[in-house]
Structure formats: C-alpha cells, structure tokens
Image 1 (tube, rainbow, N blue to C red):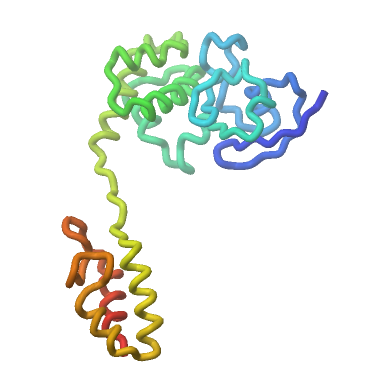
Image 2 (cartoon, one colour):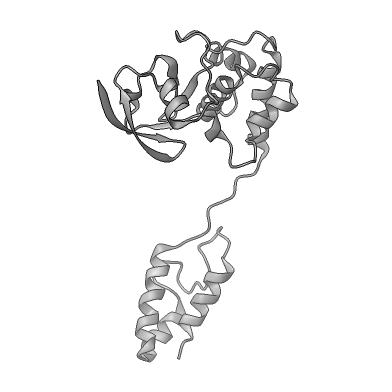
Length: 226
C-alpha cells in the first residue's frame, strides 16, 4: 500500500509517495536521489546508513520512511555548506580517518551527533559513541583522532557575540521620532537627557556592552531631529 508523506531532507520539504514498508534509507537514496548514506548490513549493525532524525542518529536501513513523515532528516550531504567541507569532514581527511570511504558517511553523521551533545569528548567517549559504526580499513585510530581534532578546533574558534540590542530603547527611539516629526520641544529635551529603559542620562548601550555605530548614529539623529 502506498502512502503520501513529506520528508524534510537537509532543510528541503519533499512530498513523496512511498510504500508503507519502504525504509528511510531506500527512500532517500532511490526517490530523493541522495546516495551518500550507504547500505551495508541492512540490519542496524554497521552504521553505514546513519542519518540524523530531528538531531538524533538512527540506522535508516531499519527505520520506515513513513515514521519520518514531517521530521527533520539530515544526511551526510547536509553536513557541509555548498562546496565547503565542515571542520569535522576536513579533520577526517587530515587525520587519515578515510580509506575506502564506505563507512565514512555514517561515521560523520554519528560524530556530528556526538559533538553536538558533547563538545569536549574524551577518547573513551568518542570510541563508545562510535561503537555502532563499523570500519574494516582504518583501525579506528584515525577516526578517533579526527573527531578529537574537530572538537578542539570548535572550542578554539571564538564565537561571534550577538549584536547589542535594547528593545526598550528601540521602541522609545521610534516613538520619539514620530513625536519629533511634529516638533514637540519637550520630547527633544527628554531625548537629550537620556532614553527611558536604559541607564539615566545614557547616550550609549548599558555598561559592559559595546555600542553599535549604526544604532548610535541613528539615535543621535533622532534625539536632535528638528
């Protein structure tokens, strides 16, 4: 019997008609056309078919496509952005974590789930979390080294801080701009003394937060608008 489902594969909504017994692996490979995930054992033993389902690694060879209806499916193709490899993929190449490559897609998916859950895993934790993925070529040492290197790189990469934003200030500035357009001298005086919702008399962001040049210039213009 056929069933209508919608798979969200790597961020793309794909309506499909599938047999109710079709596996997620065969559906993604044969109907969606993404062949990165491999079929090794067809029995949830080797991990070559691993995909992320709502962020959780699953053996797609034993997972029905109808069970994934509406869920977010991430395959190995979804781990990189365009032609740019992810740090984990680069580490696999640099540390010798790839030989024949058949197990690599599943390894990458499982390792991605590991690093999202534990950004600083120990060697033992890496080996345990990847124990469901079998490799007959590398001896695992290169794979473990690659995951550890990717984790270290992620910890050393500075995170971009969120831009400073004071919602009260923005709303106040917007209200002031509307009033100043009809020339209320009293509002201009209050704007010069300081903005409600932020430190009294302040003409910049709260202490400890850097000012954004564009916002400062905009608010300066609003407070002196004639």
